[in-house]
Image (tube, rainbow, N blue to C red; front, top):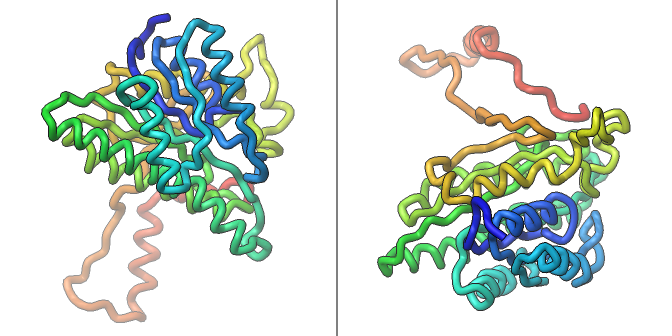
Length: 301
């Protein structure tokens, strides 16, 4: 097998099902050796099973590719460290980290429990930080030893992370944090030869049950616009050597469409050159609002 990732070694977290599975398969088709990480949990993080990761490994081997399974918990320091060591032990190197693991506990804020909050923040935000931390340290060590590094990190945010999602305060906060983490990591790791980008995928998976309507969830003219395989081509390219000029970006991807999310920018400003009188602030804010486009609406509100 050969392609745009020929010879590269890739870790994909949450790769047992859905979008992560399609990432792993496409990287293999493009010549990469793949570490398939998955705990085999349910939609809300319940239970564990080695089956999903092992099944994807078998699929890759049936394609003629090379892969190993890993069932470490990426939200634990030691688990994330062992995940990176798995790639190094199995294939002798690590070139790409795709952080994809996650689950949802959707509740309105007034119904959300502390556990709902902590678990979603842990799996999405800490589950991105820890593999990134250990992979980044490995690449820094290689770079400082004089070994050229051409590595990639692709993180996974969400539309809720960009715009907010009603009933998804925990998921929105966690995946918004993924975007901020990605920007910081791109700035810090670039000196070692590492690029870091984030994607905002829209696809039909266990996590989007109920969010995609029946009118948008099936094939139209033979093209299934919400199939999770549609996300993999962008991610595979971002993991390739050809993307080394792209870092610190956030890509929205759905069906056959790819776009750049433009993020926060400094907007209109009012400066009186002295401390404001509280009575005058209202008029100043009203003018700023007139000069600024309305924000994108919160999803589902």
